[in-house]
Length: 179
Image (cartoon, rainbow, N blue to C red):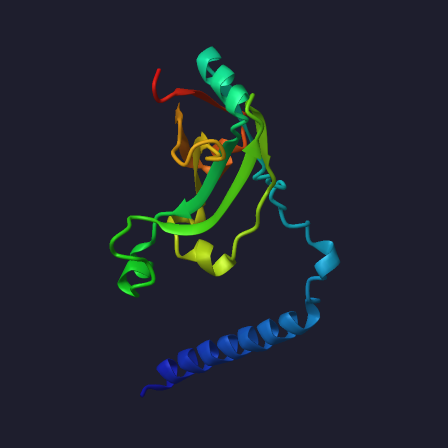
């Protein structure tokens, strides 16, 4: 190696050494950030999964239910579609396209009315097994089978995400199966 090349390398090493030393000193001089100096993390808005189901009856259905003192059941089945991982781990029943999370029922008087379903909590592990972690709800309405062992009502139904169900009251109309 020539003398001029040696001096150039020596200067480069000296400069690099100074940079490393300066960087180390600079790091020591910079204080760690204080947690209370950081802006607060965005907190998601509280979500209420409570919802109402308004059941209305045709005049003929209202009259027959009142005469027989029959009640009305509003049933909510909470479910989700299993993720690919849940299917691969055989955590979902392969005979059903969904995973049941919970079930709730409310009985109304023969005249119909509003069934209020309170917000419900779900097991985080279960939510991790369904697509997008978003529970769905399926609402069905039928007679309480007090006066007859068979359902006598023909009612609409509702199925969507729980978030959609909570946005506004769900309206379900019923008539007699015989109508």
